[in-house]
Image (cartoon, rainbow, N blue to C red):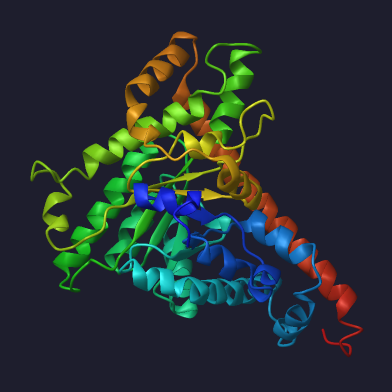
Length: 375
């Protein structure tokens, strides 16, 4: 791997670049393997990604028929397909996981978005996915809803890697981080051994904040395009406080002495939605140590070609607080904005999930006669 590669440079600075995409074609063609060789060290998925991969391709058709032969519900058919892809991606990433000592090289799969407000249901499905996939470098995605926080704590206490998704607000980020820390403490209290292999990321969404705030501010406002990055930088400041071990104090310090990992902030929704903004903006401006940025393929290509690798997330903390103060002075409640975004995010993933199941049912209806009249 060349030191001129921006993905490699980012890793040297302390940020991992993950791909926000997965498909069977990517796995079979060797594309994911090539990306891993170029420095990409993780993969994230969600219902929208799987909808695009499965519904718009015929590469899954034979597997669809095979997994439907026993009369399984369409939800089960989808899960079987998804688990196959997640396992295969985890195997491709396993060398990166081993090289990083269990601190990188992960692939994420999400619990059903229908469970976003159901703590017990989330825990049950996460356990089942973790056990069925049976790969140490898998993360189970749990939404950062109020109901998600106790699920995070429980899953971490059982040694299950968790990717906390759909985080928009600083308060929700703190709840997710504290749930992770409490889960580690529970793991230790239960005598389950060293927590050093338990990994977690907190996925903080960025561009959607700008879309909402920019719309409310109106055209040409001086703070347009700044809220998403500022909000994320403030979250990073919270990360530094929550996981600071330099003073030998705080909730995380005793855990750190056992080899426990920090829960890294992960920047999600990092493709620009406004074409007037630079296409690498949400990667360049959130570059910093102990972070992850998960990017779609187009953003990865742009960053590889012309991204900037500097520690801007820490350098911009003071400016971030000024931006957030300016937004408040403009009469906007960032808490209202992020609360609406969380609800919209859950609904969007739920809608994609329902659409995906509908497309699978439609495909099965068309494929079954050609497959010998299977039900």
